[in-house]
Length: 330
Image (cartoon, rainbow, N blue to C red; front, side, top):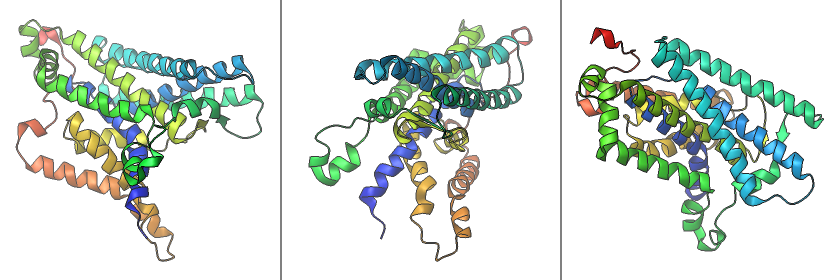
């Protein structure tokens, strides 16, 4: 029987990496940069955190981990690795005017290769016979829940049974929505994405905003990869274990109509759709499960069609999305 109380926490856990990824991509796309390298960025963010966590656990040995350092070191490593990816993408597409689609796809390939290469290297260093790395002690620090959640019944399980990164994802999405809608910085960023020529004529530094938006967006997306490994996967890194979550995060941008606050609910809904096949009876036909896995993508296509039919400008992507800006052509 379908149990909503157990389904919602699992949907939220699935949706948090998508929320980080989509929020970061929305910020990036608002500047006019179409970063299809988000899957690679999430890989690099996750692996950078794994490297930091691995060497910290190695340095401590069998002693007790410092909970603060166990969280701080992987977090900083993840943000730094993601930042480098953002700088690389910005340098290629903003400074060198490279094609954004090709650059994004190349970065996805690079990010996946980066994660798999260093993942395999750490497995060999640890001397394990299994093709994975277990960072269970660090994961315990990341996945710590509120101590009183269990005593509050269904309310605690549905709303209070998550780690700090889950709540951080929601906070980041809300702050991003407020900045984009209510602040001068958000106005300038949207102007750069809609009409960089006009923004440049008004004295707004187009390159600066594109760099900042892309780098900040990549750092946020990288946290999605870190959450997946340290919380959802209980600290276990396996090569190619991410699946298509990075691409789902990009699709979620369309579903959320380029609004981070809408992305909160859209991410949880997508997370639920992603695991819905586990709750739908297949009547003994396992091939039906593969069809059920298509549900998130079918929903995305439907939303894309519906949003295209509606002529409201605020529900459309930035006018100059994916196009390089050449100042001399202004």
